[in-house]
Length: 200
Image (cartoon, rainbow, N blue to C red; front, top):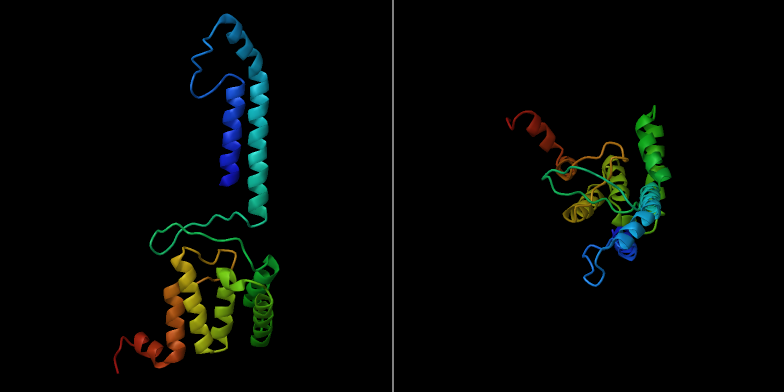
């Protein structure tokens, strides 16, 4: 945003310099000579505007490609969603996603553990919802209730800032669903009771 604002200011300055200011200058009434001069400036103005547009597009593309600019849509309460610059690398996310394609339970565990260890080796992972979600899934599958709840709490805090795991991470669940998973681990009978409609 600061970059775009700066470019806008530069654009206004350039236009003013060429005689196309937003507010007409009272000291310089139009005349045939000035009108002719403006016409001569049109090709140059067009080139400048085109160059500025190209710069904006290239800069925006670079920021998006390097994950400094990410677009995400939708949330449970229709709030704007903010996804911060990713701390976990694409490689780590790929390891996590690949664990769902494992053919055996051992392969699944090994792939998930690899992703979990990669997250732990990443500085600042606690600020990235993607990293925290991977840790949450690991602890859930390890049936580690205490640490799974800690991860849910961290994800809740990030969600309060409108920061959520991105769609790049496979199978992302809502905060409510994650909390329900922890509840089931804490009290396995909960799932049974819910499935039977609470009947004994």
